[in-house]
Length: 352
Image (cartoon, rainbow, N blue to C red; front, top):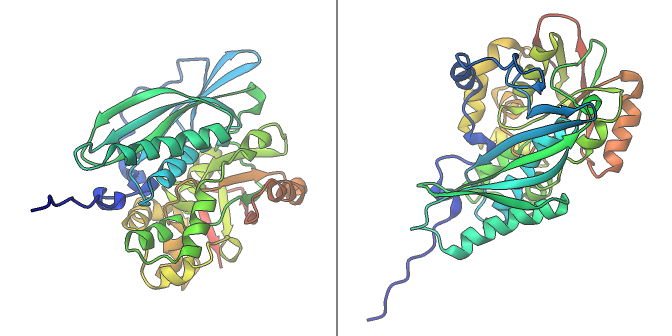
């Protein structure tokens, strides 16, 4: 009798969550970090944990800063190469969001080696290395463990000049807000897990999540750009709120101006949203003012966890149109002006 060959499981079936939707809820993370030692005593540490920024920044000398971050998660797609590409793109985004340019990466790998063949794990690593090669950097090492769920990501190291550092703090009243990528990654990933996303939607999803946010390194050299953050697991509203709190200002989001994936609205109306979207709202909804009568599905879009999402930029309003044109010319066709910064209590207001 012939041996029965076990079918390889889908990557997404091995994980309880996927992508940046795996992140701890903002309120949980804030509670865990509340008792940690402050880093203000280190004068060369320009950016630490105080404002929940995208990466740490250490000033080496008068002309050089080191930008350091790590990001890893469980699969949100079943194609191993695509998983590796998305995870690597997402990790490098934190360096770009600080105004830095990546110089090297280290791989972080945890795999259930008894359930996945070596070829699948190798494809994940190859996908990550492909993205790093596109960014012009090596994967110079890393660490791996045998884990019950598949995990992959990078430690990413970059460089910039001190005056090029861009934080989520620094947004000024009167600033315009630009978002560089469309929203809907979490909604699409929920459909992928149910095998309910058509091929065109998957192509749209991959094109966005594997597009390097390298424009951030250029924005850091523009004095008209006052604050930058990348939009990931806390959703657009969550990361806007982080910028508002760090900048002691009110961020106003124009709901109709927010760019969406083509099928995001239709899928959200069908209830194809992630549990992380609800956890996000429960964590920070008290600091967000929504327009009266906003349907729940629409709010779910604005709290939808993004993986390898776009950059949220606060900039001089007089330069906003020119900056938007430069961002679009760099390949970010979905980039839009989505709101403004106002003086007032730290929070977010959504206008219908």
